[in-house]
Length: 103
Image 1: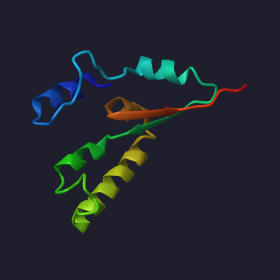
Image 2: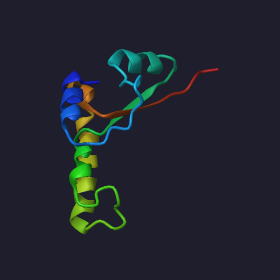
Image 3: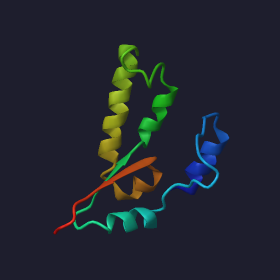
């Protein structure tokens, strides 16, 4: 949702597995999807935890050293705390939208 982060990501040596017409959701997209529910819950992920890819074995926690596991837990916990600050939401890399419809 952040054009600046999208530009930075294109400059980094990180594999991008996306189709040619794929794009990130905008804030308006997230609001429209959440608006389809009577009781939406929007949860943001992957702000500081994007750094996990740079940790030794960061994506293989069963085999990772204890320091890596601790760093992953710290980054994910920090993400959940920072998600409470609305002005940072545009920098998160993932969002989950859940909701219910009243019958």
